[in-house]
Length: 380
Image (tube, rainbow, N blue to C red):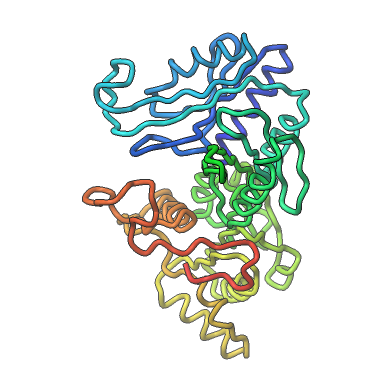
């Protein structure tokens, strides 16, 4: 789930709890073959049958709501297997060709593990929730070692190590793994939303910021022109009125995507230097390839050079080959590339692809996943 979906789910949950309603969260914990969503997708179900977010394209929701209402009444978690093949799913003939496992648990706000997990999701801080499927207990794990909850001794050490390894990835995803004794263990993850930093607040930055915010990015816009930096132009974004010589006042996150789009050579030159010296794994320059080359040449003339590791993060031109022309189309092209790059896909057509759709390693040019303890980011 992206950060926008998580925000919507938590907002609805908090409002329901404030009204005194009971609620359950259904989570996809296993996917076998083709399915609409992946592990870690969540849906909120309230005691009146209302739902927020989706686990599929509408195939499973009605059945999951019925299971969730029973879980709300009984308080007993449920793990249900749904077959999405043509002639097996409740007679619906969905025909996706795969199956999913969905775990439903009533929300217990007073439980320490639940409270810590919901707080991590709300803040967007790194954490993992480890749940043995079909067993008892669960653990809340943070990077660095903080652990809340209980598991059988035979699972606890494995669960903690598996959670820490998952959280060490730059783009951790929820997953179900097998413990040494064969117990399936689901590891859900909370991570900060990906950061998108736009150097430049021009007209074409507006749709890029808006679309990114809708996808759950933490959007930042940097420009020395305060008149351009208004909430009306960039709703939901954090605005930074910084002149080129003030850029050191802003430090991108280690999950940032930096896009240079000032349409001003002098500002772009300084912004490119700032971006390449940051720890951000993605640096993009809007415009033709020659523009980025000219900016690097100008920096070299000033005596500013960069290591191969720094230059390996530079992307130019940016965006996928969609034939984009209008600013809104260009924004879509850029965000499509960012999604593909983050998740390890090459951004090509799915039609004609022989491998599994959701397996990045069956797609060409999938980059090697980065980990948080890598000193210098690898080439995307």
